[in-house]
Structures are given as structure tokens and as C-alpha cells.
Length: 195
Image (tube, rainbow, N blue to C red; front, side):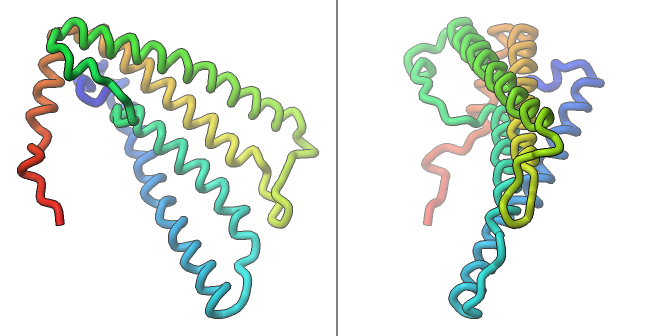
């Protein structure tokens, strides 16, 4: 989707960039919490011979939020793992564009089902309000990580829908041109230095 962001209306483009920046900052700030926590768990357990009380209870919501916001960013940047072999078989720009469009439509359909299920999960939590399910020690409501799941799926669906809109807007010729420019921008395997 990022290849055709200039084809978005200006207001929507600013909104999308703002949302991507916010998610990127949240993921960048929250991600180091995980290894730092495990460092302290090892320090407390094996050196100080103490226990870091209920760390998994407050770490779980952070993990859910980081994972699903990161997944939304992966959808935005179109960097999910895939096994597309059609790129190597044909160079027909219309066929490649059509394949990408079909993949995006399937992805959006599946993601919308997941958004619905995530909403049912949130609605179930809201309906049980005074008796919310909570973690055992710190009493963190389960709605906190579950809301992260819902928000992540909503953003994935939003970015997939935007990608479909942009694919239809730019057409096969501009898609082929953008993909060729992206391929040229990637470094050659021979130029990459590995240690």
C-alpha cells in the first residue's frame, strides 16, 4: 500500500501517516520492555534469589498490543510472509495486478471475519462489566489485551481496504511501474555484505 500512498486524497493520506507514526512509536517504545523484563526476571531469580511478582500479568497485555499493532504495520507496509510464485513465472503486469487484487480481497474478507469475532470478544467483556475477568494477582481486566487484538484487526482491515482502493485506482500499468521501481531500489544480493 505504501507504494501508492500518493494516490490517496490528501486528508486521508495525512490521517494514514499519522496513524502509522503513532503505531510505530507505540511499538518502538513497548518492544524493549519485553527483553528488559526478562533480564530483570533472571536477575531477581538467579542472582538475588527473589521472584519478580506477577510480571507475566502486566507483560501479557503489552505483548498482545505490540504483536497486533506490529501486524497492522506489516499490513500497511505489505511485508507479511507469503509464498507468491507467480512473480517468477510471468511478467504480465495485468496478471500480476489482478493476482495482487484478488489476494487483497481475500485478505480483507478474512480480516473482516476476524474483526467481527474480536468485536464479539469485546462485547462479551463489556456485557460482563461488573464481573470482568481479571488476572489473578494484579486484577488487570482481560479487556485490555483483547482490545489490543480488536484494534490490531481493525487497522489490518482498514489498510487492506485502502490497498484494494489504491490497486483499483492506480491500475495494472502503474502497479507494474511501482513494483519495478521497488525492485530497483532493493540492493542486489551480491552487494549485501554478511559477516
